[in-house]
Figure 1 (cartoon, rainbow, N blue to C red):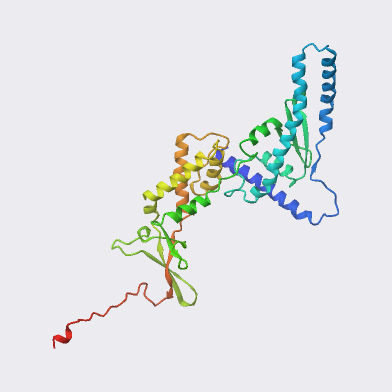
Figure 2 (tube, rainbow, N blue to C red; figure 1 turned 90 degrees about the horizontal axis):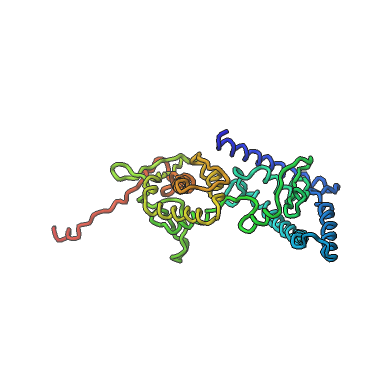
Length: 358
C-alpha cells in the first residue's frame, strides 16, 4: 500500500479512537451511579515480590561472605534498588504526557495538535488509556526476568494487548520530547511576517496612534492584478437590495517571485527545520498541513535529506499562498448596481486671468 493510503488509514483509525473518547465522555454524566474505574491499578507488588526475595538472599550471602561473585551480586542488588527510582521517574513522565494529551487531541491534525497521520494507533490508544479517556489496564513486567528490562504492558477494555513500553526508553525519550509528536504551530510567525512586510500586505490605521495599525487582509497596489492598459482587474458580485461589491484580484505570481516573500518564508521554514532534534515535527507539519495543498507526503520516523528539506521550504510557500493569502479583496464600499465602478472627481478649470481678457 502506498504511503499516502497508509497515512490516511492510520488517521482514520485515530479519528475512530477520538470518537470513542467523545462517546465515553458523553456517557459519563449519565452514569454517576456506577463506580467504574477507567484504568485498573498496576500491581507492582506481584512484579517485585520475587526480586525482593532475591535481593534479601543476595544481601544475606554477601553479609555471610559466601557469595561466589560479590561484585556482580552487588551490582545486581543495586539494580533492584535503582529500579524503584526508574519506575518512579517513568510514572512522572507518563503523568506529564497524560496531562497535556487532552489539549493536543482537541487540536488533533491542526497546528499545535497531535500528529494524526504519523502517530501509530497503538500509541494513540495507549495515551488515551493512560489519560483515563478510554478504559483499559496496565501491567508492569520484567522482560526475560531481568530487572533492567522493566516494561509497561497496556491492554484495552477487552484485555487485548495494545502496546509495550520499556520504562528506560520512556525516561530517555522524555529528556528531549513527549511520547507523541505534535504539529508545530507557525501561526505566530506567519502573522508577524505579514505585519512587518508592509510592502506586500495592506494595513489600515486605527485611532490616532501611528503604531496602531492592523492588517486589512488585502495587499498593496503593486500586488493586485492589472489589465494590459494598467487598470485594475475588478470582479463585481451582487449583494442584497440591488447593491454590488467590487473586488480586486490578488496577483499571487508577483508575490511568489518577490524577494521579500521568499526571504521571510525561508526564515520561517529554516527555523522550523532547525528547531527540533529529529525530523518528526517537520514531517508531521508536512503530512497534516502542507499535504492539503501539495498532496505530497513524507514517511514518519525518518530523517529528512537536504533535498527533502528544500522541497519542504518550497511547498510551505505554495501552501502559504493558497491558505494564508486570499484570492480577491473588496475594493471600496458596496455601491448601487447602476453606479459606476469608479467615479472620477470632475475638477472645473478656472482661468485666473479671464477678467483681464475682456
